[in-house]
Amino acid sequence: MAQRRTLVSEAATTGIALHAGVPAKLKLKPAPSGAGIFFHRTDLKNSTPIPALYSSVSETKLGTVLKGPDGASVAVVEHLLAALAGAEIDDCMIEVDGPEPPALDGDALSYLKLIDAAGSREAGAREIIRVKQPVEASSGGASVKLIPASAREFTFEIEFPSAAIGRQSFSFVFTPDGFRREIAPAHTFGFLHEAEQLRAMGFGRGANLSNTLVIDKDSLMNPELLRFKDEYVRHKILDVIGDLKLAGRPILGRFEGRRSSHALNNALLRTLFSNPSNCELVQG
Image 1: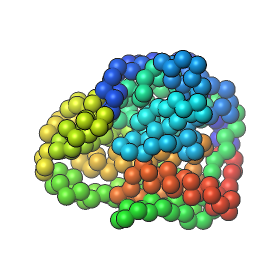
Image 2: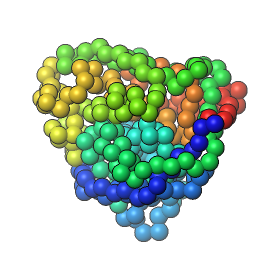
Image 3: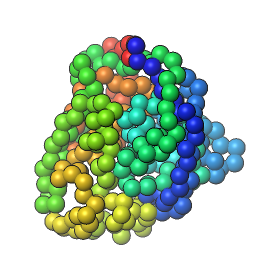
Image 4: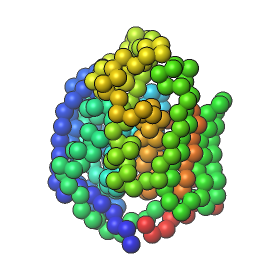
């Protein structure tokens, strides 16, 4: 029987927030079995913990934003949540002294290294969510789907007009080691022609050529950062794994995505839990 996991000790790091562009401190702390994943904004006086659940999602533009019962929010949580999912951490308190965790290297691997430093231990029996019948969400030409499967599987397809990306697809059967090798190193990416407008809107102010793959028309400006030929679609799977962590438990099923977004990923979870016949809890 699989066991829940939490951290052995605390681990901390600092860096620049990807969108806000301000310094941010991050601390990961052990939590009691069954507590789940919570964020705590330590820079806000008397703020209460923000549960990392799909029902806490308040915004999905250029990142997943969680809002707590007292109105405090934390943004761009998907990369850190993907790392916690990849390390199979079920219970953790995350302290952040700013509006976002630090971006670090713009991947999940840098967070995995922080989790490694803290160590992990078993913390009671784990339940997982088994998908019983297909559920899906779509918008325009984008779609996401969860279907019954005997393993945690992910397949994704993207297509961009830029020749630097083009059409890419990737399939992945989840294991912690496979996540660490194949998904966690994939960097976030963005387009140079959008950068000025995004920064004026308060986004991307911490993005740079050392933490983001930047595409200018049909060329990648920082090819030395590229870790995989198909890194862009791998990062999309990284985002999905982080967003699905907001289910509160691992999901046993096959995820299929085409040009999807954080908004659709959240819509998929809301659809999954809207009907009790869609899924069931089983021992992990």
